[in-house]
Amino acid sequence: MDLQILDWIRENIYCDWLTPAMALFSWMGEGAAFWLLLCGVLLWRKDSRRYAVAALLAMLLSLLLCNLALKPLVARPRPFLPGEDAVLPVLRTGDYSFPSGHASASFAAAIALSGWRRWGRILFPLLAACIAFSRLYFYLHYPGDVLAGALLGTALSWPALWMAGRLQQKWPCFFDPS
Image (cartoon, rainbow, N blue to C red; front, side, top):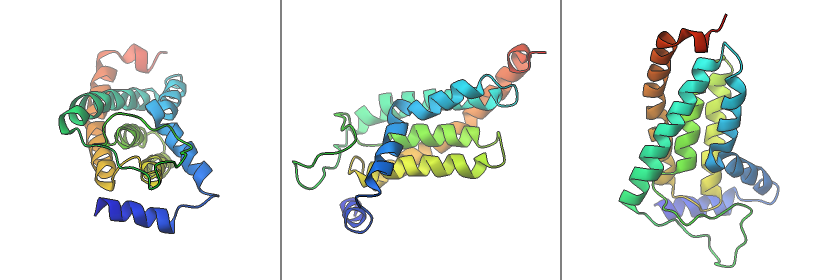
């Protein structure tokens, strides 16, 4: 069923004008680059520092559990793009497919950051979903990989928020320097 979904996306959604946007979303999730940059900016603001720390902790947990533990353990090969000679506008990595590290890190950061501002509750998860979908768009992950990554990242954001709250209690001078 996974390949049927990928084929459906390829036949019904894939198009020339959408491909650059999907490449941008995929690139934003590469190494969690966008989320790390955003957290770096948010660390400078007092009102967002706790959420930035939580997002960084959630992405660290995601890296450890998703990329370093589950991917090698499950060892699921990545799907392939029909036509071996197809040129992708994104980097094809040689690591395993399950779960999606892009989806896991993106949802971990997005959910941790979503409490910072009211609009963030919609914007950050929507951006994470676009990043995750881009992995399907380019046949880099199966739908199950992306779903598992999104659920894992979401689940990891909650202990990260709790840890950030504990750190804020322990070192209030870092979180609210007066």
